[in-house]
Length: 295
Ligand SMILES: Nc1ncnc2c1ncn2[C@@H]1O[C@H](COP(=O)(O)OP(=O)(O)OP(=O)(O)O)[C@@H](O)[C@H]1O
Image (cartoon, rainbow, N blue to C red; front, side, top):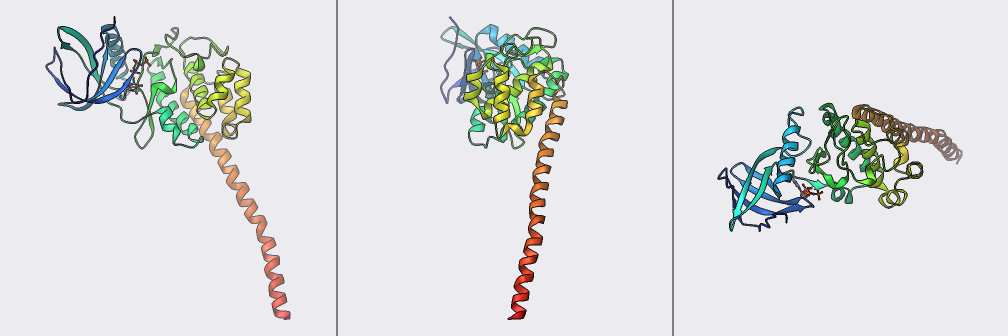
């Protein structure tokens, strides 16, 4: 049986090996592998995760291996691992940076659908340094991301799917997995994540429809083509679904050009419409003046 400790707010946990003291503020989440608490220690706020010893070892290794990514970690910074002893039972845990923000799907609930493009741009910013460091996210899905800070940075909270380039993706979710859509292999390469990021974007706007057509790529493309929101970036989204990008920054650049091009076109049309109104107004004004003078 997995050893899981259920802490309560206000409780103080003592690290058996470090002697460090952690004051439990509240539970912030739980999943298949463990329970996560917001805690306060001598270093300030942090997140504490109770899990079994093999999960603590594996997740600790993953978090530590990610830190050299340009002094920025796509996931939480690892702080330390320890055990708590309660009634003679040992409960392993580790401490990591607390990422303050909203889970991606909670964040999107209060936003317009157009925000899905901003999320995609931020996801591409998140993926670029990770890919440059020789790894891919693998299990890319909204449940694994937090939107943090006023710049709406994307940070990952579950790094279990991180896989070295060239290997076989070790963890995935069918809805975002390109092999399940018959659109490529499960080999860890940037295009695998870019496919998943695109499905995620489409699902942020049309969740039910995407679930209904799951596995049929032509129907996914139909959703994009018939969507008033997604149509604006259709060429880029389709390129990513067809494995045309192997670099997150190239996809980002093309997405920005596509979106700004459409915006410029919209502004030009509006301006043209305004200009077309002037001759009509001029004629009306002239007629009014002539009538006034004749009177
Ligand atoms: N460092 C953190 N900062 C803020 N919140 C966190 C942090 N780590 C985890 N959480 C929250 O706790 C939840 C569960 O954590 P996590 O995904 O690591 O658990 P898990 O057992 O591995 O989940 P899964 O069932 O997806 O494998 C997350 O969805 C997130 O809401």
